[in-house]
Length: 375
Picture 1: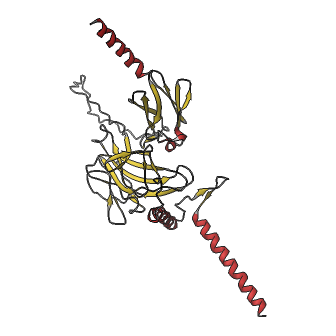
Picture 2: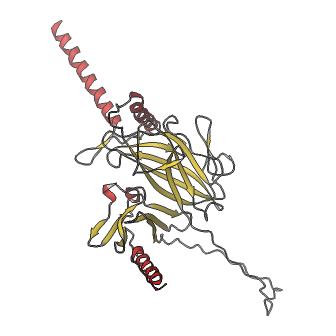
Picture 3: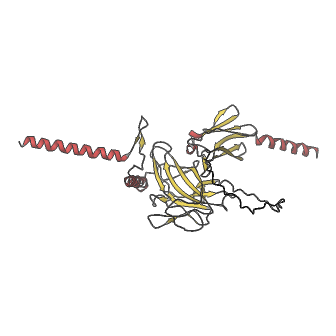
């Protein structure tokens, strides 16, 4: 019996040590600093979906791991930003996993708040009370209630055949996938969602718009977001990759509305909407209360010995063409082709103009030469 007690005590001591010391979060308007003591039996720590993504690995100093997350560019390491459109307050969230030597995982939700700018106060004219107004000497307050809606917290995941994939698991180009954007349990009964804008990038040089004003740019590559139960938005798409990297990053702007967001009528006749009712709107949502910027990563690569299929490569090419057409409509290029060594953006439309000019100049030279010969 005594041996059993000693064994149980040792088990409790191990459990206490295994949990590790308390993590800390420090906030400035520019940086979220998360410090995680790697004591007990903690082995590694990493950001959600970014276990092997080198640009977002923590700094290790002795037995302490430290994440320095840039709040000026929250997309870089998948930090979610929630903007209160009424107060201007910005709240940042980051999910961090801590693995121990036995394979167990702790999850830490780091949170920072940045106050918005003060709003100007307008004084209204106060009308005088009537002459026969009498205020009672005693007020009987029988009931007092105060309620406050929770701040929405969103999640974004990618699934293959119903199972989640992320930046840690590689999928092959052309694989049918589904992206889900959803509210947490506390927020779901109160708010509705609408994906207003989304683009995809290779995390560096190239990016392409895939959702604009709530509608898909190329429904064959990435479908419109729809909803079945009102709490989760889903969009089907085909996996594709950029030439220079295996990581594909999706950056989105999601409108959060009270109860529901109004839908958007897309060019293919489909209504992309937030929740519950298929109401169609041509303007901004009057019940918009938050704007959320979120990011998700997937890893796309060819299997060993697999050849690059032409139809898979054509997906990205078709998206580039669709983005160029969008640029022609509003007068600005929608596709960012690449950054030069001087960090100057180069657009494909500019290349087309230059090539036309060179052809025209070459034609003029040939014409002048012919005129000289026949003179």
